[in-house]
Structures are given as C-alpha cells and as structure tokens.
Image 1 (cartoon, helix red, strand yellow):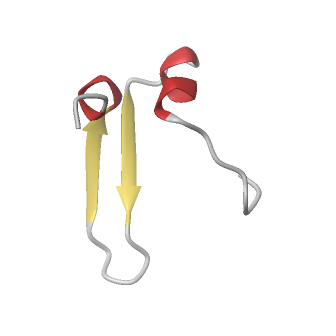
Image 2 (cartoon, rainbow, N blue to C red):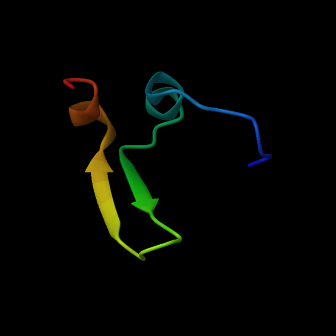
Length: 41
C-alpha cells in the first residue's frame, strides 16, 4: 500500500477481510484481530 493512503475498518469488511494482522517493526510484537470486534471499541 502506498505511504499516506488509508483504509478504514469498513473498507476491510466490505472487501471480505475478517482478520487484521498488526506487526510492530521496532519490537516485533504482533497480533491478529477480528475486524468485526474492532468496531466495538
């Protein structure tokens, strides 16, 4: 994805993506989150 562009949780859900994986490049911490559950926060 080009730097400076953004996608919303709604965009991900509309594309049929049900999980979002996040990885920190500084500490290598990682997690996988259900897109639907992220709407609750």
